[in-house]
Amino acid sequence: MGLLSHRVEKSELAIGDHIYTWRTVFAYSHHGIYVGGSKIVHFTREQNMFSGDPILFSAALDCSSPSSTNGSSACTNIPDCGFKRKESGVVLSCLDCFLGDGLLYRFDYGASPSVFLTKLRGGTCTTAHSDPPESVIHRAMYLLQNGFGNYDVFKNNCEDFALYCKTGLLVIDQGALGRSGQAASVIGAPLAAIASSPLKLFMSSPAGLVVATAGMYCLTRYATDIGVRTDVTKVKVEELTSFHDCKSSKKCINENHWDTREVTLNQTDTPAKKRQRCD
Image 1 (cartoon, one colour):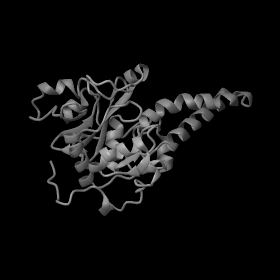
Image 2 (cartoon, helix red, strand yellow):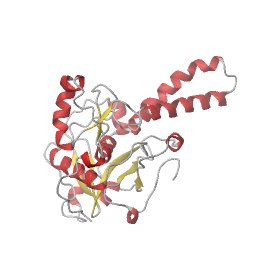
Image 3 (cartoon, one colour):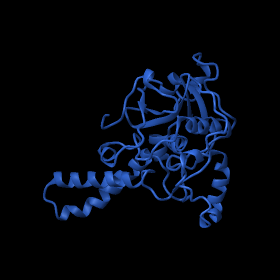
Image 4 (cartoon, rainbow, N blue to C red):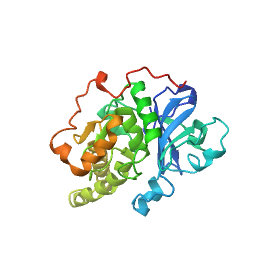
């Protein structure tokens, strides 16, 4: 396991894996769920849909790319590469179109705090544990047919989509940062620099200030990880629309209607009938 990420070969993939690939010289990464048969379900920005993202950050973090959306229409690898519902950003692509010219990496779940803190970049692991593959595939395929809402760089991006498919966890507070470790890194770095500025008065060595800033940056990322946050709750994929409606009105949240973090494995949103795998 590397400090930057966890690279794997295509032959090592298992159904339900959360995978990602780096774009633009490691500037940002694009995430998706492997559903078998060299197929990936992932979330992209709808081209003609205004998302309200700040232009400065959208250019750096937008998970959409020509290789994962527009280029898939000419793909001959699988017949349904590029499938998506109208006005939905959830897309089914073949693995080659998803990767483009990038390499393949697998997102790690159940990472220990020490391992999480050694990661130099966000968006590569979480301390949260994954649900069984059957639940992961069910969520991904359901969202392929029903959508995942509007794309938002900081609150609802491709990493947020994959994290939800793997864990079923959503952020309760509508105004809070999403689950994406990638977005947390972008926000955490300048915050750490600002917070450590007063330490210049007490530190004569520049190296000491760098170490202190790096420590604050890592702690900021850790505090926003879905495995340790207290403002997340487990939501069945079929109830996503109702959950978002409740978030808007805050009625259900005030009544603790969605306080379901302590859900056992047999209460996840796995369908009653055993789903046929796509391998």
